[in-house]
Structures are given as structure tokens and as C-alpha cells.
Length: 78
Length: 162
Image (tube, rainbow over all chains, first blue to last red; front, side):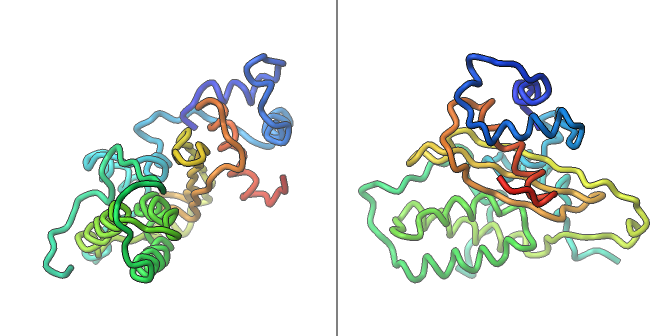
């Protein structure tokens, strides 16, 4: 997770003018977090491997995240 | 396409593809065949998941820019044929926790302004599950998009129903 405000929204339930319009079913997340069934952690942009799935990246960043994701060259294994 | 040079990345940065446009339409069958083959490749290659999803939105009316993007992916694949996911034997005893990473692009799809969630589950160093999904609702802020995105992972992991 790389968005602090979304984590705050899930961890500290409070009525909030700006989150009023979010559909109720998505607040299920908040419910599960308060029951300690889920744990949310902030993840820095450099370690956020899900970035490769949501935005086009430049070549250096792309290669770096591809390695972190676990997609590796299989030719020189032995 | 055999003589073409390969690319380092599968997409240009800042690429914006839209359904409407004045460009010429291309051969539907060929386009669908390319997308179909690339989707099959996505089963072992999460690195091209993003761009394949990008081009598969235009299956109905593929136009020149969409086709060029499809060709670029093929050229990227040509240069990275040896890549794949490895589940090392040395990790067989890891009492692993599964880590999930989730991210969303707010308003990534300009035609209906919906956001897309991407998430990966990793076990040790290797990815075991990944998914890209367009939201069912329009998010009004990045925070809301990420908040909605957060819920997809546990839903998948525990089989909850929304």
C-alpha cells in the first residue's frame, strides 16, 4: 500500500465529510481491520512491486521492479 | 517481425490510448489473435500484464495506435524470451508468509474514468498470484481508489463475497 490517507481511513473509523460518498460495501475493509483480521502496512514507492501492474515505467525502474517481482532469467540457472 | 529490434520496456511512459479517434482501423482478426496469445503468455509473465490489459480493451474496434502498441509488446517479448518465474528449491522449507502488494491508478481509463487495481501476492521471492481489475465504481480521489483497491486482495485471499 503506498497511500497513507487510505490506510488512515481504514485504521481510524470516523465520520468524515470527504469519505461520506464511498460506498458502504467498501467500508467492510475498515471492519476487518478493526477486528484485526487484516493488517495494512505502508510500502515505499521503491519497494512497491504492484507499480509494474498499474503504470507504464521507464526502463531502469521497470527492470528493477521486474527483478523484485521475481521474474528472472531462466537461462543460466545451473 | 523476425528482423525487428527488441525493446527494453513493453510500453512507452505516459501512453494514452482511447477508443475514439480518427485513425484507420486495423485487421480485427489479427489483433485479436495477438491479444489472445499475449494473454496466454501473461500466465507466466506478470511484467507484461499491464500492457496486455491496456491493449485488450480495444478488441472491438482496434485502430492503428493500438496495433502499434501490440507490436511493441511483441518486440519486448522477443528481447526477453528467457524470463520467467522461478520457485527455488532452496525456499521449500520457508514457513512463508504471503505478502500482498496493491496499487491503483486513479482514472486510468479515460473513456469511462474508472480506476484499475493491480495486486500481487508474493511467497518468498516469487509471485504466486497477480491480478488487474477495473473498478466497478468511479473513484473521486486517489485515496478512494486506493481504499477500494485494498479490499480486493483480502476478498481474493479469504474468498469473501462483497
